[in-house]
Structure formats: C-alpha cells, structure tokens
Length: 178
Length: 458
Ligand code: SF4
Image (tube, rainbow over all chains, first blue to last red; front, side, top):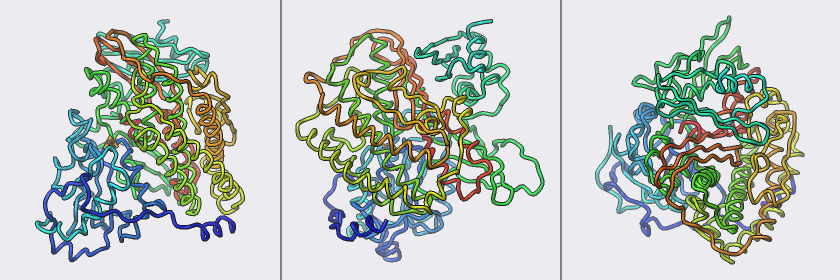
C-alpha cells in the first residue's frame, strides 16, 4: 500500500480544468434563479441524487463526477445521503408511476430554498419512454424544474457545466419554494 | 403430461435450465437451456390461465408474477398472489411476508437510498445486528419497456433496447440485434461481428473496474475506489474516441454496427490496453495484500453452489459459486468461437470470490480486446435488415451475466419483445446471501452482486 500511496504523491494531478458555465448548449435554465436563494446558499451546495426511473446510464456519469478527473468537491459541490441535508435535487429518469410518490416525498423532505435539476433526456421530457403509460414523462410533469442538463446520458463535463450555472450571476431571478 | 408441464418437471429435476418465462396477450412462453440448445415453448391460453412453473421451480416465481401484472395471465397454482412490477394505486400497501419470533425488529430501506444508486426497497428483519431475513421489493423503475417495444420500428426498438439497463447498453443492443437478425435471416458483415465483441469487452472492462473499486469502497477502503475509478474513466474515454459515445450507446444495431473503428480509435484502444496492463496489476496486489480489507470480504455473503445452480445465476455471481457457465461459450456465438476465451470459476461464493472472478475477467477481457484488435477483418460494418416476418432468440453475455432476448418481427416492426436481465436470477440469491450476516455488511454484499434494478423492472 505504501508504494501505491507514494506513487500517488509523485503523479501529476489528473484533474481537468474547470469548464466555463456559460459556454454550453447542454444546459437550459428553466427560469432565472432566485438571487436571495443564491446568496443564502452561497458557493457551497449539497446535492441529493434521485433516480426516478432512469436506465442507470445517467447515474454512471453522475458517479464519474467524483473521480479524480472531474473532482466535483473542488467546486464546493458534494453529494449527500439525505434530502434533509440537500440544497439541490438532481433528478434522473422519466418519473415512473411507481417512483412518483417516493420522489414527491423526497422533495417535501428537502428544506427550502432548494433547486431541482433534471438530468438527461428522460428527466427532461421522458426521452425514449415518453409514450409509456407507466411513466409520467419528465420531472416537470410532477414539479417545477429550475435547470435541465441535456444528454443521454450527459457527459460528466456537461453535468459540471450545468451545475456551475447555479453559481453564475446571470442566473438570478425568480425563486422556487413549496 | 403436456410439453409445458414436462418442462416444469425437468426444471425441478435440474435436467434443464430456466432461461426465461414471459407472457404476451393470451399466450405464455418459456425458454430452457437443454445442453447447449435453447428450447422455446409457447402455450396458448385462450382462457387467460397457464399452469404455474414457479409452483415446482421457485426461480420462475417472480417471472410469473410479472407476466400476471403485465398481461393479466393467471398462473394456476402460483403460491404467491402478490403483484410484482405493478405497484397499483397505493404502493405502500404491499404485504411483506410475515416473520415471527421473539426479539425481532424490522428495518425498511428504500426505495430512495443513501448513495447514488437505483431505487428499490429492502425489508430487513433482524435479531440484534444479525439479519434473519431480507425481503426485496422491486419494480420502482418499471417503465413499460415491453409495451413500448410493441409496434416500434426496428431502429427505435434497438434504441430502446440499449436503454433497458444503461450499464449494459452494448450487451442489450447486441442481444437485440442478434435476435432480429435471426428472425429475418440476416447475417451481419464479419467486421461488425468482431466490432460488437470489442465493444462488449470494453463494456465489461469499464463495469468490472468500477465494481472492484466500489466494492472495496463499501468496505471503507477508498484508495482502491480512487484508482479503479481512474481506470474506468480511461476505458470510457477511449471508448468515446473509438466509437463516439462513452457508454457506446446505439453503436450496435440490427444488421451490424452504427460506426466503424478508425485507425485513431484503434490506437486509442491499444494505448488503453497498455495503460491497464501497467496500472491494474499493482491494484490487484494491493487488494490481495490488505488484510483489513480481506477481513471484510472473505466469508461474507456466501451463495451456496447448489442455490447458484438451481437459480441458474449468471455472471460473477454464478461463477463465484462454482457455476461454470458463460453464454459466449454455451450456446456461444461468433467471434468468440475463434478467440481463446478463459472463464474463471471459483467455489467459495463469498464477496471475495465475486471480486476475484471480476479481477480474472478483467485480465481475460484485456486479452480478448488485444486479440480482436489484431484480427479485425476489413470490410463494411452494416447490412440493411430486409423486410420480413419471423421470430428470433439470443443469449449474450453482458458484464453481469447472460441476457436473454426473444422477439417477433412483423413487417419491419417489433410485434413482441421480451428481454430477461441476469438480475432476475441474482436478486433472489442476494436474499439468501445476506442471511446470518450483520446489517452493516449489506452494502458490501449488495455491491458485490451489483444487480440491475432497471434491467429487472423493465
Ligand atoms: S437520459 Fe439516457 S442515459 Fe439517462 S436515464 Fe434516460 S435513457 Fe438512460
């Protein structure tokens, strides 16, 4: 183990430069974000991920945000285990009938102010599952969405760019509270 | 005895292996593996009933419950009357099996879990720290895949097949493509046959690397996770260079592949293989030499070989418990018949054995990728599927185990399609594996299985 640790120290870092939030077509701000919430939440956000019927492809790329290349925590963003600790809900999947209640309960358990981010084609509008009676067809069919990150699945860079727009000054405007 | 009931008797006696059981309106199907041959039986059930096979062969239980939920078929004699994929109007009203005894308490977990994983519910009944029973409740990610398949044109259906379980997108698209090709009597060009296997091995590498790291992480050994995640990322990046998508979604299509491998792509893959050959062995040594880690994985979550055989557990779950089966070999498909394929098999059945099977499979896949790159034939990569009507089946080896596909094509559209994820036969074994272990070891056991929720829930 000592060798592995030593080699790790001698290695140059693998971490990518931070992407710029603005330069992207992969992200869609549903409406301007609340300035008061932005001020309150600051530059440190706790994220709770919720799979609402994803094929798990989106989860794989969300997971990748934690690896050495993307190193999400350097931006003050981190994943938390409980919705009670969360500022941002990252929702994937076309929202299945069977997950609807669990999703709504999780959102209710998250304190205000909070932002809802829909990740991937499925969460955006149901994606390939949009026609299915077993799905509600996207997160916006159940609750207001603040930000959409496109892709099937979005790459980790798309995800980073999307999340960084939450800090962007131009994103200020209306609030969401329940 | 009808052929249907005879199939049940053979399954119960262990002389045939259950591949899947499924429904469509007014018809029930079962597929068995008899030696190296896939046998398919269809039973017309005009009155909406069929004799339950789950009654004599428990691995069929959940499949029959699903057929009842999805197509309204009634399996006569099925001992479990509860729905499975259909959660109805009040999902919280599900009757869990009763557990009786003094001092027992229950821990409900999920569907929303603490980590970034898929949703499912686990009901633990415990005596102190020890789990005396785990009951799973799945179906939360049921998206109605089979219903969406009906009537879809072949290409849209292939896209859908690649989104049944994202971590196995190549394997699903591969199985779906093979089944369509058999239904229409189409042979894909040789180069495509080899490219598909190349993608399948890259997918296996990425997932196994991710799993080895994640299992160690659940035993609180984050160092392995950090290093394995880097290697996994390297596989995804090389795949993106070679095939323009990190997970290689929509790259395998009926008739061949959607993209060809360029010289730049091949170089990226060769560089990847060299990098993995350099970086992976020290991590294997690290795993093997860390006593505190072994302390968590050795002897934890044991699956007995007889259970693995009875449930026809595929992939590392079966192979860590002595079940020497790999769909690339039996029934087998090209190009694996022309490649030297090693299939690691262990018999301990614990978390450690499931880690070692993955490690050996990573080494085997590296050799396969090498072999494929060296012998990739030239030529076109795609043949247009002809119009036509027919039925086709396929059994392909994903990273998790064997994926079964059966479908009927009618005039260029999918009339019916059933896919069975390896997880169908692995989830029940997780319930058995955790018995007698402490609650705190559940994440570790669960990760060592890494069953698919999406693939199972359809
Ligand atoms: S957007 Fe794509 S990757 Fe994400 S859950 Fe949907 S199908 Fe899967």
